[in-house]
Length: 307
Image (cartoon, rainbow, N blue to C red):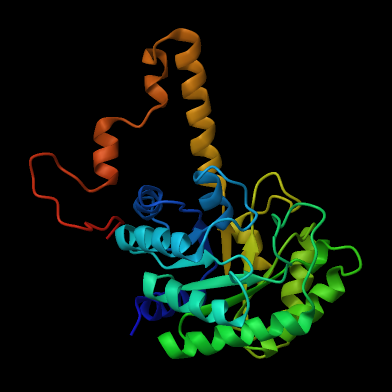
């Protein structure tokens, strides 16, 4: 049975007890640091992966690249991971393959979205959606693949961007999410909600449906991205509104790349990085993050995390 079965079961059990913070881990080292800081799960962002390769989040990166990086993160962090799968990398056949690939890579679940391809960041204007019935077929294929590779433990999350699309809106987003649950989604990701009350009302509507979440309905995922349309809410506030996990998809990448930018600016201006040393991760800290002690045998993958 694929590794994703056990990870899916772990994340389901966690979400039954609390709202789980899932910081973005766009590579193995970040995944280790997420684990070392005591987080119980992580998130893998397609936008962060794409940016880390130097290209925008418009669907240019293949499922093979995604799967390889997911395996990298999971193998060294031992964290249950929800992974971005964009629009499923194609139609039904590719959606099935994507679920299988992610499950074997060790992810706990994935989300696919109802945008047309090429997709856009969920917090940008100008998005367009595929017809509801077309996306329901993708969800059905994903759920079938989950049952095949994990006995259904691998989590299928359906993301709807309808709330921010002209001609759709909040009510249509609820209608679409309802249809996606009926098609087999066990987690719903309402993207681009613009008020705290919208989050509350959306979760309230979903609790009326059948599903695995405590209190009924599907598990609910909230996106607490920066510089977007969503107000800044705490993990506790999201939990109070009925959410079971919160992703921070690009936060670690943004923080890291801001540091890289300022490091390079300092080097260019001063010809030295001595003044920048207090802002760098030391050699000792880097080795500790990799569970590595020089002159001692290192055993792969030497997983990180607090015992």
